[in-house]
Length: 245
Image 1 (cartoon, rainbow, N blue to C red):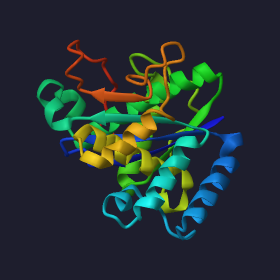
Image 2: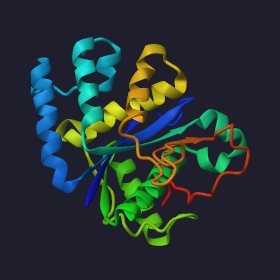
Image 3: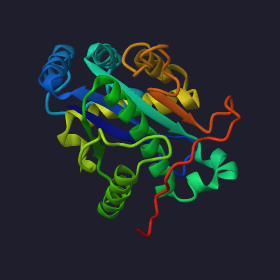
């Protein structure tokens, strides 16, 4: 059994929006927690303070602590997934994917769920998705959307290996969601090209991003960009989120 913790970076109305995080095998959860706690303690970071991606950018987190944290994250037994969307660009050609903020978010979640399903099938395992909570009414609508694609599938995937609906909670109560924050922030920074901060994304891509079991490719497997100007063919249809449902 795997747990996929997801967080977002940016907002759906931004030029670049990202959703991503880490998948942890349930029986390795305690190892992840113990190694992460030991790393932060050794680096001198307070045990009761959340280490956030934004803190590594605005220098709230000292550079040596950030370096230690990312070195540790890259060594943990986790698999990483992220989807990076370009809503303002995509809206011109793919209005149905980006018509509302909820559509944009649902498109990102669908792409992640399809890749997680393939990962679970390769591992011959099952999993759940834990999502950083937003507003209650949005959380409820997103749960209904996810239940629908679980029952009906997407164009390319039946999601039978993802059990139950979405689990949602605040990040400060969840180590998994805190690690997801440290993954998705750099994914968006890498897409924007934010200088030195995007090197964290390169660190993660080189170590813990999920790869194709045969080719070893990250693109389209653990990491999805959409729209991708290097792939001119029409993208797959996704089942859309109806904000009135």
